[in-house]
Length: 360
Image (cartoon, rainbow, N blue to C red):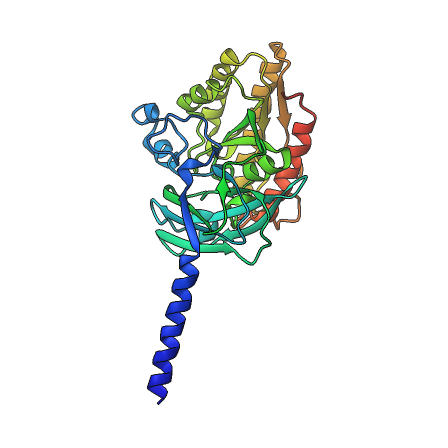
């Protein structure tokens, strides 16, 4: 008798699950706008660097360009549930960052005057399918789905109720007419946000309601001129942010900062350019070698900035390290890479600085 009851329950459960699955219709995300790319001339849709750089830039930079940090899909729907299917390229894992931040997706919706977090799509491996949110009222909402920070995306589909519609966005948010381009390191790429929406470039995109293009390359923000040339092609940019200090040594800094800057400035004579010092990493208060290296590189960056300013450039700006992530030591995972708290504090400082810069 118990076996019969168990079998009947299993059949009912299977039928209920099948019915639920049948109620979700999936749509290839290729049909919806993708924001956050410096160029559309990429090998596949979901990557950051144009195909022509494949043999021109250093291999680690090219490989990291396959990560989808800063990319987001925009759509609208009246569905009561939102699901996603996505396959990542590498199924990457790290010992200091959540898998949701590395290879998950992160859903936001527009609530009249700001982007409101809905819920993250948690990854289970290389191939993923998850109902992100359900039991909503059936009303049209605008959505933004942030893609993984430290993995690539092979394919992506958005699931909605089979009786609902899904369309391209009606609202022109975030504004893509004058993007901000950010060049930097692993922190810029998003290490170690717990979910994609908490990367500082994604936070800025929501707060400014403006497209922010992430050109952070983990361990490889080494002032590669090929990346400067790519950035320079964006004549529509409203601001260039250069946040590379942790990945360069003193020699690279003094030899390459000005040429990198000149590439940007030659093509964009009026576009504001913001130099950002590195934060004083919390553990450097105890590790005096690290403290010495950091403070010296910040001093050298200030020197480069002052030289350019003396030459008469009136569209350069500087953000010093004063309490960029607070001074309580609680804003990093490992003494270097930011927690969500660190990203929020850093974004606050950047946002305040941008508000005082005359951008388009």
